[in-house]
View (cartoon, rainbow, N blue to C red):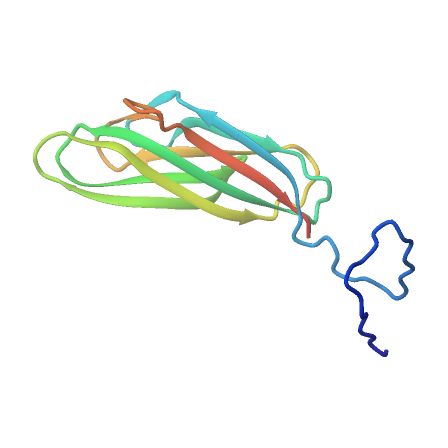
Length: 167
């Protein structure tokens, strides 16, 4: 195929142009829709995973498309027992675990409070469905009890953003 260089100062977009050949890969990677949800609800957990109240649902236009999930969750929590503890936030699609964020705390002086500690997860998912798909987060602390504040003393809110990416 021969290439021609157009010698022109401008391109008149009102003109009609004919193109021949095949364009492949056009559209792949486009963001087709964006869904965002926020919460400022509170939760408590005494060991097992507890819902944080943050969730969003998306319905894909094609089962081959992907979902880019971005979670930012400032959580203030109080651990009521002393010892080394781990805190976790995880992302789920329905009841399926997708990703987990972990922090370790060495607490040896009674209770401990972490103010507006930011947990974040970015994950590219392939749900392979055109049914409505719900994503949510859960939180847990190992040992002891924990009160979770999705928003406390500030304007930070927990948010989840879902983007449908064309495959």
